[in-house]
Image (tube, rainbow, N blue to C red; front, side, top):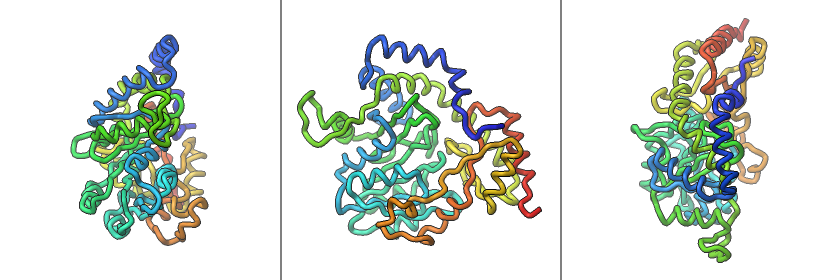
Length: 365
């Protein structure tokens, strides 16, 4: 069976390097924050082109502390796409603000500029753009946010290595927020995340908030959190960061093979650039998802679902008053999406087998 995702292959190639990194942390007993986290912060800041990176315990915390550092809170509205992982919305709710879900475009599956513009009200304080599946948001979203004096936050959880105007995403926002969940393009061996910013004041605020609202030990200036990255994750991420360019290149090769060889007669995929997207996922839409997935399973190809329920229709947000039909493109995506195998260690023969399995599907037969 060809897996849609596999971490063990990567580990088998890196296990000696990873073991050495973890041993160093243990020998220095730098388990919470410390040298190895600071080293990774500096390396990742250089990689994305941001002045500052603050490492955290998860991508969810990154989004949360980004909003908190901007003093977004009760009475404020934050615009975000309906088709994203729920953590994007949680962050808005955690600070007491109201999430305003908007629809995506039908071809890029990224947040619609027109829908985003229509959603702006006097209460709007920030916009979160999500680089869905690794494809960067369109620059017009940032331009509209800037024109309305709104904070622009980039959810880069799926976009490590993605490019926009020749630069890595993550340095063109009030905050960029990354997740290092194990399955991400750059994944920790546990939980992890970070924010990137070019503002030293905002960076210092996040540094304080992640450490119980403290700059000086045992003195607490405001309500804070325990959201530090641990040393082992910092060391692991530093080791893996050296391989990220190669992995990103391989992801693009696989995606290009899919785009060039999959038959679009019965399937549709995101209009994504093989030069810009980091291709965290390769998602297709099909009319009869269950039949399609069963066919691939019988052909020896496993698949995933990202995501079967859009945020605005989640039970947790029932009180927000959204209903079926409010975000038709996001809803269509959720009802018809299927994730095909894509990870750097996928072999050429496996890619060919996936293409053959997809192209042999005949839904009307």
